[in-house]
Each structure stands twice: as C-alpha cells, then as structure tokens.
Amino acid sequence: MSVDIETTCIHGNGQPEKDHPYRSIITPIFQVATFAHPGIGRSTGYDYSRVGNPTRNDLEQVVNDLEHGRGCLATTNGMAAIWLTLELFDSGSHIIASEDLYGGSVRLFDAVKESHDISVSYINTSFPDEVRKAVRENTKALYIETPSNPMMEVTDLAEMRKIADEHGLLLIVDNTFLSPYFQNPIDFGADIVVHSGTKYLEGHNDTLAGFVISRTEELHERLAFLYKTMGPCLAPFDSFLVLRGIKTLAIRLERQQENAVRIAKWLRSNPNVTEVYYVGLEDHPGYEVNKKQSRGFGGMISFRTKDKETAERILAKVKIITFAESLGGVESLITYPMIQTHGYIDSEVREKLGITDTLLRLSVGIENVNDLIGDLEQAFSE
Image 1 (cartoon, rainbow, N blue to C red):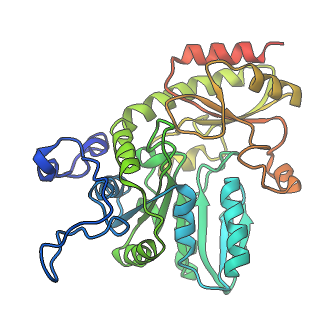
Image 2: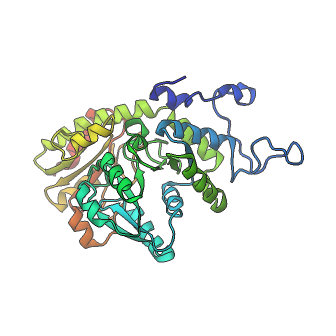
Image 3: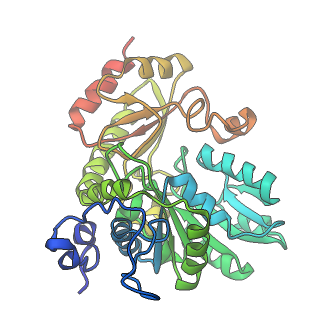
C-alpha cells in the first residue's frame, strides 16, 4: 500500500508494528550486542549488533522509504556517512565537489587525500559547463550539496545526472539541508544520498546520526560490506531517538519553512542587512531549479550584515535564538560560519566564497515567528 510522506514519517512504507514484541507500537530499544542462534547454521536474522540490530534496522527502513532508495545504512554521525561513501574509491581517484561545501566535509576530503591518494576539485556546481570542464580521466564521482552550506547555492541534479552518465561517474548528494521531506535526490538520478541525521531527521539536538542511502541494491551491498567490516554503526538507543524524531519531521519542516519565509522577508527589509540568501525568495538565482527538484525551501537562511560589528552584536545579544553551530532542530540556532562551521577553510577560499566576518547563518526553529523576529530586532539594535 502506497502512502503519503507524512504517513511514511510515522509508519514507514508499511512499517510492521505487528511484528514488534508484544505488538509494541513504538520500536523497542534492543540494547543488545549479540543474539543467540536457534541452532547450527540457523539464525533469527540477527547475530551481532554491528551487522544488524532490530531498532537500527527499523530506522534504516524508514529513512530508505523516505528517500526512495534500495538500501540504507545508519552511521554514528554525518561525517561517518561521508567517510563510508569515500571508501568506495580506489587510490588515484578524482572527485568533483561543490565548492561551497560544509567545512567538515572539506576537512574529511583533505584527510582522505593524504591517506588514500584521492584528489578533489572544488567547482561551482551551479554551472554544469564548469563541472564538465573539470572532469578528468580518473574522475569517479560528483559530490553535491544543494542547497549548499552556507551560501545556499542550488545545483541542478538532473544536469549532474547527465554529466555522470556521459563520463560513467557516481552522483553523490548531501541532502541534509532539505531532508527527504522536501527533496529526494534519487528521483533525479543520485546514486547515493548522505545525511547528517543529527539535523532535521532527528530534529531535537540530542543525538548524533548519519545515513547513506543507495539507488541500487548492488551499491548498497558494496557499502554494507564496508559498513560491517569497519563498524561505524549507529547504536540502538540513538536509533530509537532518531526514529522518534522522524515521526514529527513533516510538521516540524512545515513550521520551520513557514517561519523562515517570514524571517527572510523581514531581514530583506532591515537596513543593517545587505544580502539575504534563502532559496525560498523568488529572486534567488537557484529558485526555479530548486522548485523543479524539491517540494519546498527549508528552514536555512544566511544573511550578510553591513559590518563586522553588527554581526558580532547580534551573536552577543540574541536571547531566544541560540548562538551555536548545528542546525535543523526545533530550536532556532545562529552560527558564525567564518569561525565555526568553516573555520578550517583557508581564509582566501572563504573570502572568494563570501564566507566573511559579516556572514551569519540562521537555522530557523519552530518557535513563534513573531518572537523570533522580535529577538532579531532587539539584537540588531545598538
């Protein structure tokens, strides 16, 4: 039976509550490392929690259903999900990545370059022709963030799929910012989707998680072998927390987007703000592409203040909004990318991308929007 996404968030695509012990409506926490065998050569389907755990498997099935995949692996955090994906590539491989990319991803790519001899070219993937020019004989994959972090650049996934087909590349998409509620990259040709499940999927800032979802069973099997061999598996209790969080994903995202639209327009009218980066504004350069490949705009806004002093004053004075560097939770968070999420990035690169001392990133929560605007208003005041 096919169901809408709001129902999938709660039940999965036919989530088997009837198969839970004692017909439990909520997936129980199977806080266990090892499982007994019924006999020689026989198994219940679970042997050791690194390989499979009932709580984690229910979570993986729900996320897989939400992303329209053929297999999902839940990892200890988002960086573990990306690292697991990079283990697919041999020494000497080349990857093309979005130039405006989460700083932790760049740090990981740099580490992999050293340990695995994998090279990475950072390209503005909003321009497909620039991506084509960057393809080399040893290029193996395109790694895309859309919208990107923190400049909210939008990449046309269908165009990236064309390039991937032309050159036999894997298309990997980080879907953390929009979540599967608003965007399903596999529907537009992505081979692998990664998430920091810590963010919108879990939604409550109380646990870490990551996900790798594959478009084909063959790719999932390759990743699953690496997963069980290296062991970046999500623990049962953390799996339970993310399962619980996903049940409210739809209503959280709707409220966060509603608030974000109001706040982006308010920021536009503020004389102390010189630029607002939000894909839900109709004059955003990627508005039409994002509209074509997603069902919404999400709750992430970046904006530029008139000077450094204004940015620092806002960070010091916010009261309801919290100065912190994560995103996607029910609480609104404001971040200084230059020194937090992108502090690792070389200063010249940051400057080129626009990640300067006047840029702030806002993860809009589900609080009353008038309270959030009021908080920003008092924080802007001298």
